[in-house]
Length: 430
Image (cartoon, rainbow, N blue to C red; front, side):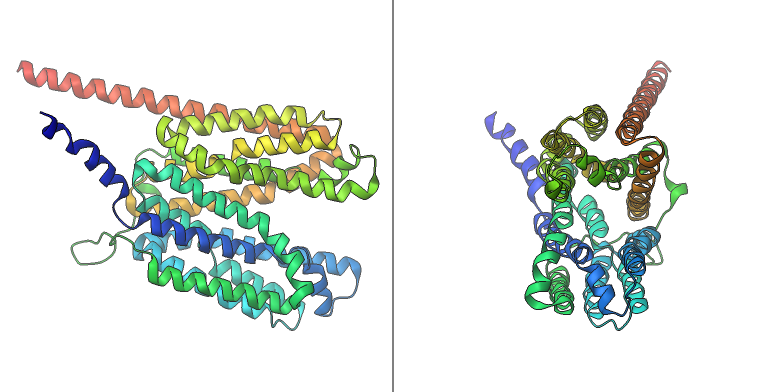
């Protein structure tokens, strides 16, 4: 009897562990981290580089710096669905090879820019050619066993968020040591290493093809239930909006809490980093939890907890209180990105996953743009406290909306099961 029962656990474990998905995850983490660092490292010294390229007026330096920094994210948002669609057709590994090689070349070219127009153009090119992090999410989501998808996507999300945190730090350390232009060359060289690792080490299952040998692809029309996917688009936008809404007001808000004016910028930087650090620490753990209790449950809980944490942020009386609350909010938000990707993967056909995850990335970029705009407008016209309360209302609405979609799907699934059972009973009676 025991010999019959024994194979079940080993077979279950083999289903989890066989295949190259762990190696794929490690390579994707390294490549995503390095490309995100490269995209964000120029933030501390960008105005200095713009000045080196011939812009002298203070207002013009600020404007060109903003244009150059935002250019990459603009084109990345626009082309993410395109690259996702091509990944569905021709393979996710191929898109990662394209993105890493393209980013390596673009970063090196930024280091030899001769004027500010070339800088902005090359930043646009970097966004167009990039997309390694979003492509990694797609490859990991589709090549990892479903029972481990939440943990794997959470671990990858930690690497992506770590890149956002480390990038500006590297940008503050390297230029004084090796120079601004050499910093771009170094970034390009590291991304080229990621390109080599991607080309040699990542393994992907063959793409499905039709009877004529052409790759299969599907779009929005192929999704049977569009409610979950739409909910994930909105959730991704709310995540970035919540993270970015206080960016325009944070320094001014911290100035009302910190009595020493010399400490304002330091405290503002700590506040901005606290949420990112919390997300880095929690993403993998919440992803693993979601694999056990369900991705929808974690999404609803994360949105609800973050909404609750936004309320006391509007009424803090000291800088350290804001740091603690932003850190806790980061802990709660860390599970959203992996769960969003997992829900999309489970609710769309395999040959439409890339395009839908691409649209999800675009929605997140929309939140990244709308957050500072909304926060700046509300903070300037209504008050800084209203920014936190308004974001709280949006996050609470997101939690209720996701709970409603989840409940509707459960009711629909229950109805379908009853219809099937009734049909079987009717067939048996005949």
